[in-house]
Length: 457
Image (cartoon, rainbow, N blue to C red):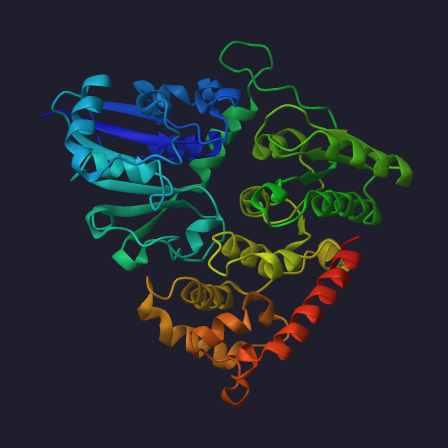
């Protein structure tokens, strides 16, 4: 019987990861390889899909067909739709007919299996073996939601990029899924082909990149859209990036905004750059940060907790710096927020932009072994029901490694709820139930937030 491999992707970066894995023979032979693109944007109708992005054609030849998940389930949104259990056989028949799958054996490769659309696809093809691929730092953290064993036990492996050499992913270890590295050289080669595209040439239509030698490259993330920062606070964060780069002696700065970020942020940056004598270029076309690394060879890459910071450091050997991670660690809510692990990794490994000696001296961050122990403790505190076997390791870390620096990665209230070391002492446990004390605590927190916002500016 014929075998069809279905690869689901929602980003160009993820598609490049799949292409690198295929090039490196990380997938077995198949009679047909189908790329299933899913546009997960809030308004897919106004946002380009993966197969419409500049550079996609340089990845297209790894697949026999390209199909759209959005079209298959229209008018539903990929992030909010899942089939009812009773309808699964009907949906499988419909999809097999729509994509000309016949009676083929199906193998799936998906990202973010704990949520839709990946979860929906794995449920429709009940019994199909699943490979999960991860293209970002979240692979080093816990699985976001508890996965049905009927899905989780079908996962054969976790393919991931070696963004933090020596660090083992925690994702899906509750099902004893083995991690497997997508070779760095294969991934860099794929990105190299993207960077070699020629603007305006069919099939290689990479947006033109300004001819600026070794600038400081600033990466925007649009954190206010996630409800972590206000729009004003995020504007100030970007302004701090420009100021920090200038204080380190960089006179040419390139800002790569998030594709969905408002244009007004760029104007605010332009005013600040003009005031401090910095030549600022804002990229107004979608292009992967890795393409900029190869074309510009930036002298410094600055961001908050973008995965691109680690690709710059681990894959291209570029100097990097972070800013804003401390306030994010404080603001992320609930504690289980899946962004907590990427923020923790970046905060622990990379130098603060404000620390000139650390940035210019490229001092190493936390040792990887210590980071691994920290992430196990953070992961257990985030998802104790999914990782009960990690309690002993978490208790060991918290009882011996809590310092004024590492406390930023934990919340006393969370540790108290889980009865972990660092919890609120028993003799003070009455405080949360005392209305007067709660009022005082709320006022104190309000004053503390005001001070932090002032400091951020």
